[in-house]
Amino acid sequence: MKKNCTIRVALAGAALAAFSLAGPAAAQEGAAFFKGKTVTYIVATAPGGGYDTYGRLVAEYMQKYLPGSTFVVRNMPGAGHLVGTNAIYASKPDGLTIGSFNTGLIYNQLINADGVRFDLSKMSWVGKAASESRIVAVAAQSPIKTWQDLVSLKDPVNFAVAGPGSASYVETVMLANVLKLPVRIQTGYNGTDDQLAMRRGEIVGSIASRSSYDQFVKNGFGRLIAQIGGNDPNLPQMSAVVTDARAKELLALIESTGEIARLTAGPPAIPADRLEVLRGAFKQAMEDTDLRARAEKIGLPVDPLYGEAIVRMINAALKQSPETVALLKESMERKK
Image (cartoon, rainbow, N blue to C red; front, side, top):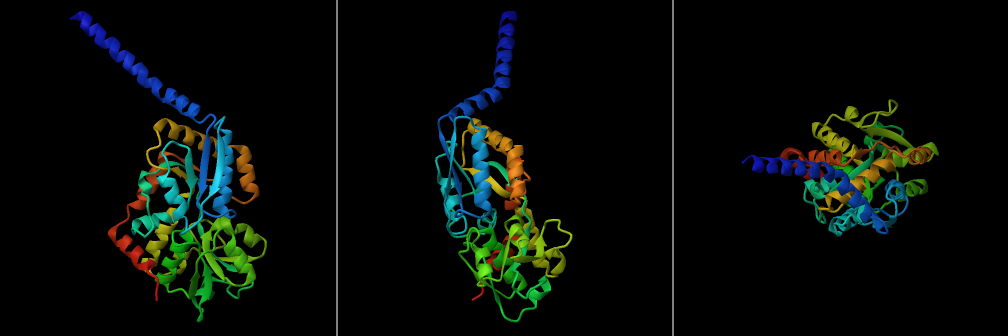
């Protein structure tokens, strides 16, 4: 009897030792997998613009921290990030395909929009590079100087958005409908197309991420008239200048999605050891002093979070009340 007890204790000790070593061993095994492999990093937009710039920085520095790997950036624009995101989701879950898309797709999943072939809650989340407040920007040559100037217009003006799945499309349509803004929504402006169109005079304004427009404004080509989130003391918060309670509800949702910006994710079910390695390489990339210096030089904010923290934020964003989802659907219906 005493001998059997001794055997059981010895086995338990061996199991505990094996368990304690599983994490580092698994990570080492995962790192070895990437040596000599090519990782495809899908950017769900055309070349140029904020998403592409962040994606290329992330890919370059993740490669640095995955010795022996090669990262290749593949742009897959279309349908406001739906094409690229569907491709990431449907890819083989071996850790060799990851990518970036915008959080406007949270709205699309909430309302079961056409073209959504993914479940964000099931994706393999690596991390996010920044938080992005939203702004309302107008062309410098426009007579619009303030938010009040815009809402007081009698004749509608052209506002640019990307495809139907993008944050710019969803947020502009929502706010235009709920606030009855005097804007005509023009689709298909990807990357920096909207800024070029504003300089040409065919587009008057846009609702976009702050970092995408900072340099445009600094160069004297545009001006900002309102912000959603953010902390610019010289720019009015849209939530403070609107009175519609439903609009305030949507503004709160938009602000929360802005916290999860410039993200990196892979398809569901990437093996745990490989996902751990990808998350580790992403974290090292985001904390690399050279990456941060380059990002600062070109005006890109870096405010990262990693792994499970992103999982919690995504799941929280997807848990909206039936009333909010109904309002989202209602505000997304384009007026005839």
